[in-house]
Length: 199
Image: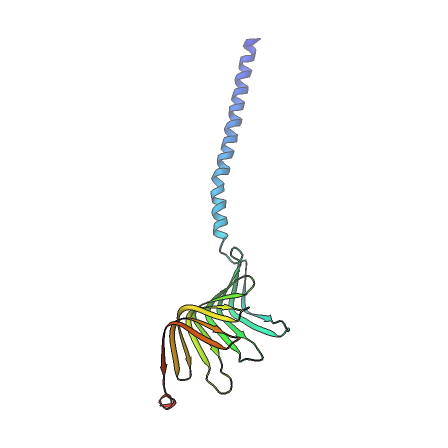
C-alpha cells in the first residue's frame, strides 16, 4: 500500500511545482507590464484635455457690464496643472470712466480662476490718454496681469513711450485704477521736442 502511494505523491508534488511555476510566471508578467503602463501615464501628462481655436472670453463686472475681453488664436487647457495656455493672446480692459486698455503677447498662461495672466514674448500694453493726448505704449518680454487688483507688473526690462517721451528701466507696475505707471530701477528717459519729432 505504501508502494502504491509513492507514485501518487510524486504526481501531486509535480502538480504543485507546476502550479507554483505558472503562478510565478504570471506574477513576473504583471511586474514586467507595470513600467510600460506607468510610462504611458507619464506620457499622457502635459497633454491638453481640450483645445479651442479663434476663441473669445468675456468677463462680466459686478454691475453686469463687460469687465474684460480675452481673445486668442488657440486656447489649450492642461488638467495636470489646471492652467490655460493661449497663443496670440489679446486682452481688452473695459471701464466706462477710463480709456480702454489693451494687452497683446505671443502667448499667455492663466490660472484656474483667471485672476492671473502671465504674458510672454512681444508683450505690448496700450493705454490711450484722456482727451487728445498720446497713447502710452509699454513693451517687454514678460508681464503679469492681476485682474482683480487691476495691476500689470513685470520684473524684466521695459520700455514705455508716450508721444516724444521714452522711458526705459527694469521692473514696472501699472495701476489701472489710479492710471499710474512706475518703473523700478535703472530708469533712463529720452525726450524729443515736438519740432524735432515733426522733422
